[in-house]
Length: 319
Image (cartoon, rainbow, N blue to C red):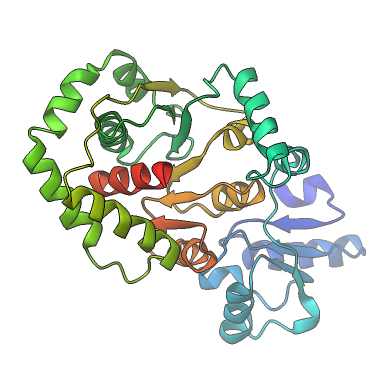
């Protein structure tokens, strides 16, 4: 009855639980009103997806990747003629920024990034790390930020850490009042302890790590083994806690690295502006495949341990 009140001309589902009962209902409504009402499904996962995404009776199914297409056809026998390979839909802001910046590694791309940083009041001379955990600001954000601050400062990396806290006002308040000197002293109790942890963690085998990233980590481990991983001059690091951000495209352009969970929308947005990603967590099941998209694409890595995340990102920013 609620669906009928809208008198829809087309129905678009963007959630895995909305492809069976809604389709059944809309077919009944279409018969009653004696009109055609197409039903489209837009699958918003990259590498894997729940089986309820794939109803072969929908009129069109929009998919973002070949792995998802394979799942749709193997699990539910979705006909080829109903499948549209569209990529993942993201906000227009990202397309506009991508066009304006182009390749972020070129002089033109760097100039655009500098311009955006100045507009956001972010020091253009420092490296910038964008840390986020969704609209609610959940996950181990606090521990990750602590380790990032300690490692970047100790290794002499000048950086700005922008933390998207979302609606988590408590986290935002805690970061604003945190004693960062205490964070450093607790994280890095002695040089010997630091060197031991750096070498051990960076040389630990990582089956899914890309060759490029592993090569950078091997160089950092060799540097640590020679006792040259603690800078004589500490890095100038500042932390900027933010609430709910509406201009995410600009912040992703301004960033050098994104730290985030494996949300498909976030991955697509970062990829659109050429931003490397450190994936820190994923929901069991459908988000696991999103991690593979990042690793197989060679534009990021996956790690759950806050200290190892910080060690690897410090390596990236100095490589």
